[in-house]
Image (cartoon, rainbow, N blue to C red; front, side):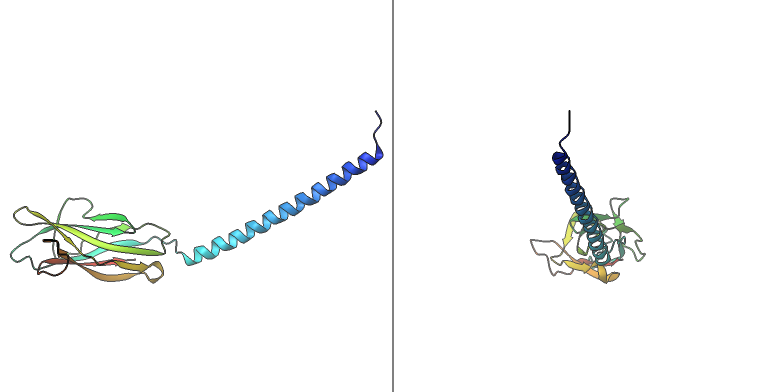
Length: 172
């Protein structure tokens, strides 16, 4: 069967156009890859990938006359709860540093921090301490050392009263 020279020319022309289109598509794809790499790099520079930690530096009681309460502190950071002590149910309030650090969620531009606590009185009764305070920490401003006050939750009040805790913490 004989081939038509006009048809061959037409087929060769289509093949050339298809090859040119493939080169254009490959070039666009390569450029898109370079642009996305640049964007990813610039976002990585703005959002720190460094691991940050919360450390409970000290817990001090305020009030609680004639009591040596045991406590359990709950730190809620970006909706992730961390509990101190992590290897026991209760810890006594002492003048020693707790020394426990908690790794925080990575790749966060901001940490929203809030504390609450449970305390066990000498007679075994468990009560809750809370606060309406919320702390916002930008990751670019770390490390931060600060305090957070908790108040005895009694009859629906969350502020005031002589009994409470002061939590000294560090986020680094």
